Each structure stands twice: as C-alpha cells, then as structure tokens.
Length: 124
Image (cartoon, rainbow, N blue to C red; front, top):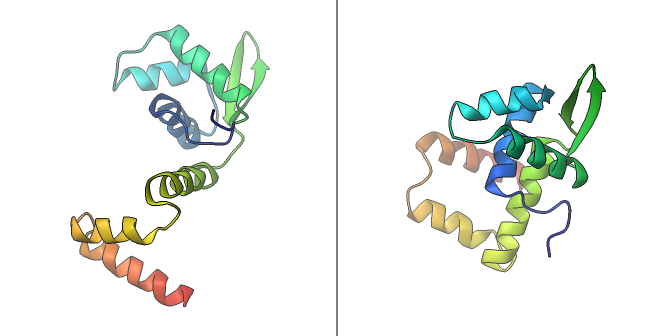
C-alpha cells in the first residue's frame, strides 16, 4: 500500500504537470489541455483531481460554480520523492548504479555531462 506522498501514477503525474505549469486551474481547464494529447473523459479528470486533493497534492477552492485546483506540493518535492522511491525500490537505495546505467547507455548529452560534473565538483 502506497503512502499519500509516494509516487504518482502516470495519469496523476500528467495532471500535476498541467497544474504546476498553470499554477491553478478548473477541471475544464485541465480537461481541455489534456485532451490535446490524449482521449480522456471530463468525469475522469474530475475524479482524478479529487483523488489528488484527498492525497494532499492539491487544494481546491470554490469560485462561482466551479472549483479551482492548485498544487500544494512543489514539483521539486514530488519529483524528488518519486526519484528517491525509484532508487530505493530498483537500486536498493544506491544512486550509483542509476548514474552508471545512464552513462553507459549514453542517455546524457555533453551538456548534461558537463552540468553533472559541475554539480559533483560543487558537492565535494
């Protein structure tokens, strides 16, 4: 069983990305933006936003006849928790195998490598 602050499902993450980008939005706003990339029912978006509110990721406020949703947790906090959970679950808590995998699979550009090297030097 997942903790409320744990990894978001792919669908939940898609909604959160919209809300982080917009800052606040109605169900209709999120539905219209999501519909540009995938088929989804309005009621599904409404249900998922309510689930995210119950999990503590969103807050809602009545404005006229609609609810406006806004993120409670920052993108950095949520994504950080997701990465930590992934590293714990997949790599037994060690980030080194993940970094080695990324380096060996050439998933990092020269710019990415330079930025990573700079961060490593700063952390030392």
